[in-house]
Image (cartoon, rainbow over all chains, first blue to last red; front, side, top):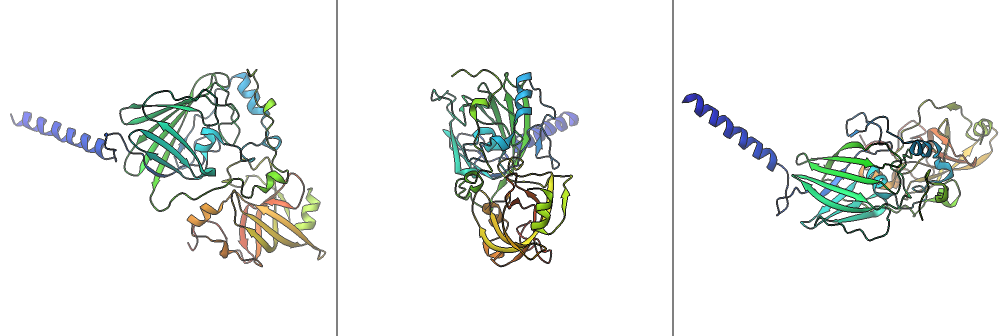
Length: 250
Length: 133
């Protein structure tokens, strides 16, 4: 009897502990995890790599297709640098930026507010496809939930961006899957999977840790304000006629 | 810009960098600057652009023959990040004697550089880490 009681008590303790763990994150009124806040994140200049402090974990070698490897090896930012030219960075380069990001979330919408160039991206959380019917720099996103993980699946990219500063390419067929999981009150696990059958033979994933910042607000950032290297000719806009190493349908 | 030109203008040694300086810029530094070459540049600040996307420094640099040349140099740092670290434009007034350690020359061979480290003439770091710590 004593054994049974002890067993029951232990089970109750475990349940209570698990419940406390599950609830130990902020939530919205509908019970979904609350991702609101300004987040400091690692600067990811190379999505293949793992950094020293563990805030970014990449796959190491990337599974290039022949077209992908050829594109990457031919990339030369001195002959065409779209971010240096202050063109829209696209979803990945904006997420990889060294500057903070703010997430604003209601029960119906989720917004990325990038300090980088004061850009934003808004996602409807109704689970439907709101693709505007034209390719865009930041793509079109469908939001779903897997328990407490928010899954943002994005396609519809215009193919004019790159994945990271090092220049890893992506095609028009890129599908990006971002998974956001609030680990605790201060920390968010961010996982991004690249699925691009033209440039990579299989999907690959990069994982990061974001830290909540309560000491500051976002500040306006104008890329165009004093981008003198562009107008003095040291930065060259990209030539999109030679951007890809596969036949692009117009 | 070749090595002899850097030497004449900057009066200091040119070295081949084994490790490129850490950059926090939003775009590729390699496209604009030769990160395989680094040098030290000393001069007097004549103007500081406290602007995005990056700061620009303007210097008068005196070479070994006493001739003054104008240089312009930029950095991966932006004002937003400096403000959060406690720094302000007033921390580096015009007229300051400054040193760019491990500067990289621009590929267009003008008197333009990527700063690398920045110190005052006495070696005090500026716009590095959190101010006052």
